[in-house]
Image 1: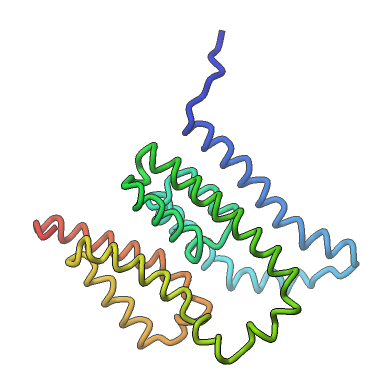
Image 2: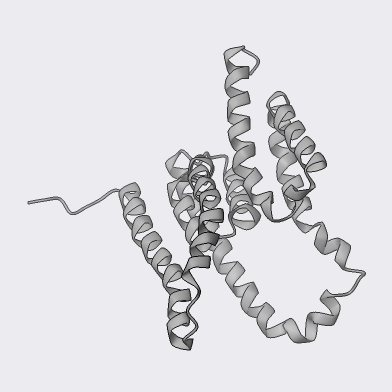
Length: 222
């Protein structure tokens, strides 16, 4: 008789693939459903031209992100992050902080569990906050649009990543110098990266850091 019991990681891979396919199908079918419902089909010639110009970039980023986020979040955390979205702004800092406090790594079983739980909690809290925000957006709009509060809102993400960055930079200053210098040079001399393309620099920075780490390791510096 075949054993029906499967390990935790096997269930993660199974459920992750299933839900990834379901979410992908829903995302792809939604615009087509609206087009057929409202009778507003796009010009497929122009649609294909637009995809031809933009899709390869997202394919490349998508492939790089898999190799980038899996070692940092673990398999379960990566599957859940890809399904719920907003990885670099919310899921990644939350998971890294949780694993740091628990003193575990994403490659361990404990790290897998903690990363997945922290990302799940982050998703639930984010959804709850969005619901509250939708309900309260009208009365709070004058307050949120206040010029007095704008500088504070602009500094939320830099403060978050700055706090996390200090922890990891202090652990290995030699390894941190090169990627920090690269990012400073790129963002100072290529202003376009400060806008829509900033997300692309996360996997670029990770790959660059891995290369530098390998070189320093071979030379016995770290």
